[in-house]
Length: 297
Image 1 (tube, helix red, strand yellow):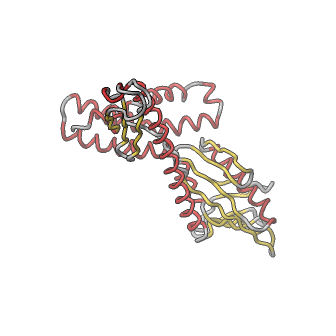
Image 2 (cartoon, rainbow, N blue to C red; image 1 turned 135 degrees about the horizontal axis):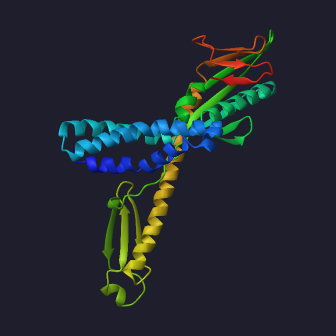
Image 3 (cartoon, helix red, strand yellow; image 1 turned 90 degrees about the vertical axis):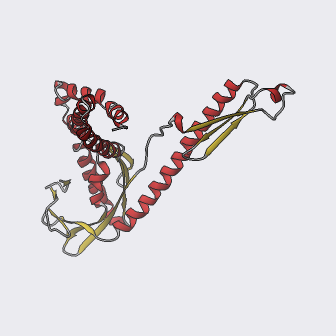
């Protein structure tokens, strides 16, 4: 397969981290730290199938087993795409309620999600206590998106309150610029500088083909200096473009989550009996302990 070498190169980037994780899962100090150990195990379980497929693909590539090579290359490419999306997952959690009486219930829910995230090996960043948080980790949004919706609590026979959890993915992908996507043109500078600029093609125009962003630099007499400056500017412009795009995609995801959140009840919490039930399946998916703490399974 023509692109096998590129797929192998892409997958090999994970080998160093995989070997590091192999060492970490057997280190006594890591095992002793329960939460960190679970985080290491979660990441190790994600990278293991990549390395296994990679090693199989390399054997097929070496011995020119074309059919097997193509099949494994397709599988590995798909797995890499899924894994890279998962690794970069960030879930934004927002708690919304209108009645002041729901503040305590919102705080309990927030704490429950905090504990749930940490037990799963996710990072839980507190933005606004009881209201906003960012949860980062492998599959963080995939796991938490099911919690998006209305959470109802029955405190006594006559009093029921609700909190709406809005959960959406934050788009935060690193910018990777391939030099092959940059088109570089030289031309004679038309600015100040006398006859010299008219004789030397010192001006530089760089265009990033995927985005169409273009930069021209002709302030210096040196083509090298103009090129260096143009590269610096265009990298910054591409980063700004990516940040703007990520913000637009995140905002769109939030709007979709708001629509989803208003469409149904996720769970009922009965503080009279200490039980919780999923609204639709009637399956117990959380409990309230004697102190009133909520534990999400």
